[in-house]
Length: 213
Image (tube, rainbow, N blue to C red; front, top):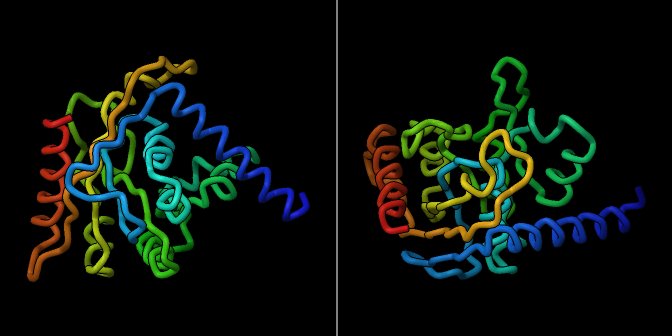
């Protein structure tokens, strides 16, 4: 495909996906602990649906959306040409290989490199979709390593409510339902804070937003 045509197709596809997401969920962004200003951030959210990063990306104001890249699973988004186009061209995702035995790049290094270009990120610290009865799965260590590598970057907790009911696991047709995204107060790694303490604090920051959603 001609590069200019590919860029145009990506923009049109992105607009179509965003419009569909808004039509199905009428997402309501609640900026409770931070203002929606064009500042570099890492948005970390709960993960209960395959549409989570699409909804979060859609809920951001256009200037923020343009600089924000989701962190997504390479082994999912490269399984077909269409998914690869959407993941790479539409969302400009940072594609992480979740298979340690197959990966050739360090996931944290990939995310840090994206931050160093000025991008913001959307990540899901649970590492996989939560289909359990627990509010959150245990966080992986990636959020801590990002906080340690780039301590000045705001880490913004975001609680996504109702999306798992819009697109239940195993269903193909979504159910229209209003969703809310509550953006909380940014976190930073504190001096001498251990990985375990930081991840526990990040977990509690998300759970606090759940209680207010």
